[in-house]
Amino acid sequence: MTTAKDLFIIAMDPRPERSVGQGDLSLALAGAELIDLLGAGAVTVDDDRIVTGEPSTPDDRLLGEAAAALSREEPYELVEDWLWRRGRELSAAYRTALEGAGELKRKRSGLLPFGPEHVEPADTPATRRAADRWEENEPVLAALASAVGIDSGRPDAESGLGEESDLGDEAVTTVVAVVHDAVMELEAVRQRRTIENTAFANIWRGP
Image 1 (cartoon, one colour):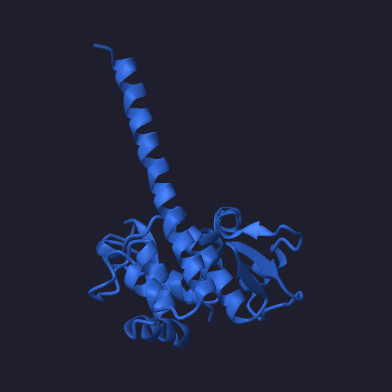
Image 2 (cartoon, one colour):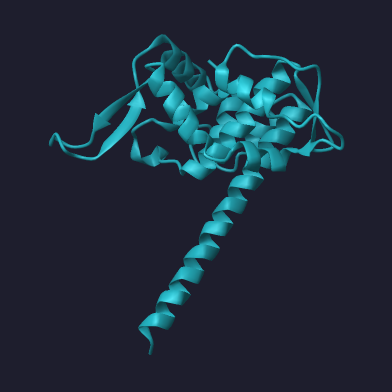
């Protein structure tokens, strides 16, 4: 399993306090992919730009797609631009892949057979490993989860700053920080749209 898949599984926890926006999650998944590519030596980060190394083909299909999507031309792509480009609809791609692999199961809410349907982690070795990594407060996973509003339960988790300071790698820290900024930017866009839509509705209603 990759960091992105572990993050998706944690985000699918059915508890209401862990409800995560799909746009936020997509940005964090793109960051998780980049962190795994850093760990594999496929890329480095220099001045917030993703510098590619020799082409590689990771065993994981989605991570392989991420590697293939990297820009290999100077001046190279900014981490922020990568998150927005790669993150487009990425949470849906991970849901499809994990459902297909049997790592997620569909379940209906409530007692009625026609209640709302949702997905949650199945009881598999891979999802148990993700849960173990989460319970151990693995710093990278905790930091990415914090970016999308999932509290790891650590005293320093609320701001996300504690996880970032404990990552032990400058490039990984940079990626996590940019993920946090991108998620905040997305929330600002949502708020502007809400204000604009409310103002538009008030105009139509009149005095």
